[in-house]
Image (tube, rainbow, N blue to C red; front, side, top):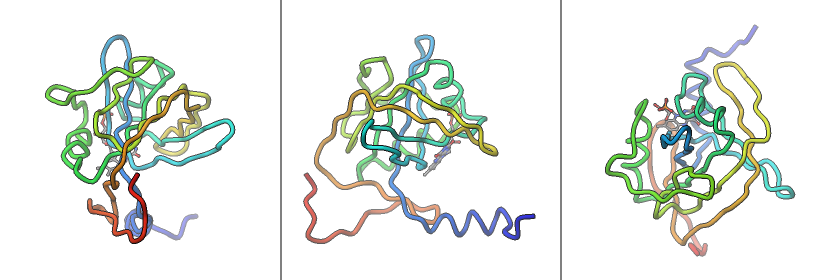
Length: 163
Ligand SMILES: Cc1cc2nc3c(=O)[nH]c(=O)nc-3n(C[C@H](O)[C@H](O)[C@H](O)COP(=O)(O)O)c2cc1C
């Protein structure tokens, strides 16, 4: 039996600082997006990444159907986007985007965007681990929006290029 309660686990795992992304897809002509911090790089060759989507996420279900998605890594000035897309069923109204190669919304000003096709899905507890092969990627200079212990902030860096 686990000796860690869910509250303890949430508190402790929240000490693992991360960036923030908006994961998007296009399914049956409808754009979906959700805030996600679960991005992990899996492999360089081939280029694979994963995101963990709650099984209750409308975006996660749309990705399961469309078989493709985009991950937009947010820059430090994009906290409002992370709040917006953390609301269930949030739309892109008033939030400009361009469609990626397979239609998944690509957000302007994102630090990096990865357009992926789904290669694997693994159900794990409340979530689905979605592995994607990166088909197209792009980025711009800047610093990331950071997430730590439930709060958004800025990464403090020294002697580092922001290119
Ligand atoms: C900083 C942050 C990170 C999050 N990371 C994830 C994540 O990795 N996976 C996930 O399923 N939900 C994550 N969420 C919660 C979703 O954004 C939230 O449940 C959203 O309402 C789902 O919307 P949807 O049902 O329209 O897809 C995160 C929320 C925040 C604020």
